[in-house]
Length: 169
Image (cartoon, rainbow, N blue to C red; front, side):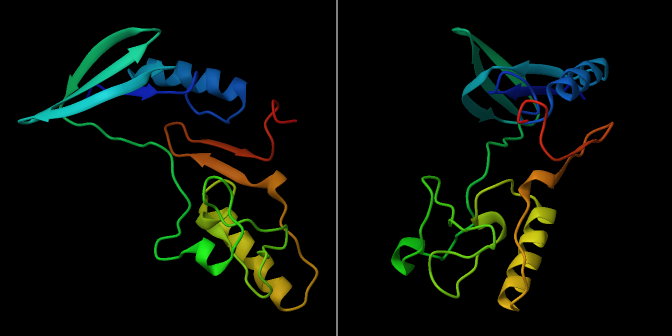
């Protein structure tokens, strides 16, 4: 199948180390992927069995057509059914529940972990936050270390990193 990746950020894999991004881009292009970084999706439509996506880069517009379109446009805090403001929880501008390094909220005895708190939305990050919260609740000295959170991109080849990128350091 012909695959076109449209990425709004200047490069694919934003947040990953620059050297890894360059190598991944080269490998993906060799595999036949058409990568359009720094490109905005303006609109999309469906007609019968095909889809059309209008894209824009540097003021120039282009229409892409195909059989399918997969849209992946970020994530938001997972707070369905929870009115954090009504409960009195401090939240960020993005709606995430603010916690300290012990996963405590501003309300005594209320902890938050995972996709409702700031940081990468990764299962292993949430799991460690849960361990920290449980240890603190049990009276143990614990706190969350975000500098060593692993990250994986499930591509071929797979890409993994742990800790801060060179740019972040």
